[in-house]
Length: 342
Image (cartoon, rainbow, N blue to C red; front, side, top):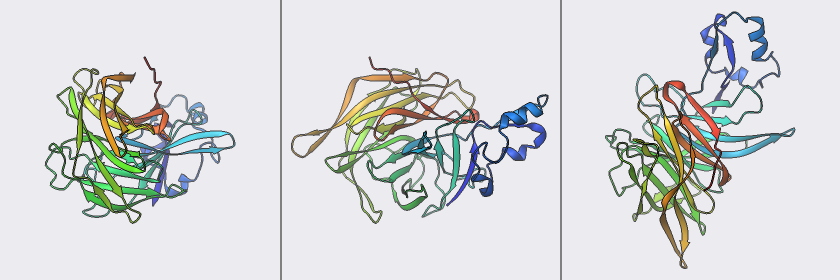
């Protein structure tokens, strides 16, 4: 696995060449900002009359928390991020996954773009969500079937070791779903009584209501993925943002609360708008049952006017909530939400 690192908000004079805005080479990937070279602001002072370029990271379409790193009293949350790159001539060679760390100084988030091999037909087309398996170093990566015409949309199983080396160990077609599979941007996995449940919702653009669906999930040690045949479905209506996509991201906490983001996307330049809700619950019922229930009305936790949230990630299955944004031509970002409960 090859990593290409860049600092998301590093400043560079244009005179140094646009080639410097490309991801760092592997040899540079080991340098920490400020360790072996002067910080970006020194370059700014030396060339104050030159126009500066700021590189924004690529869009973040889905996120999943990996771990918390601490060194010399500095704490960083670490996330696996997927990019909704298409399988076409323009984007086929672009990375599908990155590891993103929260900032420790004004240089901003640190993005390691990953070069990962995918099994099967080649590179994924339009990965829009990541669903971590609770308590394990593994996650499902789901193709969205954005246009509804892919005859074989795929779900991949990713695993990582303690050094965060990511490997794709298996792939399966999407299971038969309770409604035609089109534009799925929200997936998650809940674990109840030691059993896994796969949860997803279509983005349902043009409608204010989507359905949250749940079925059993089994992932074996050798990487085999099996989905149940019986689904439970509940509606979710997003009051805000107006004219938005009801479900653009999802995660589930350790108590079974289902968090869903809703997003408004009028085009590559926005203006964008988003909200995050506690939309449903997955809870034990009876001796062996599990019940998916809607939260009525949905509990709005945060608004993010100007941003298009496409990923929701909880830290260790609990608050805080981080969001990943796909702001199209503006690039992507990672932010912690201020969650307010009414």
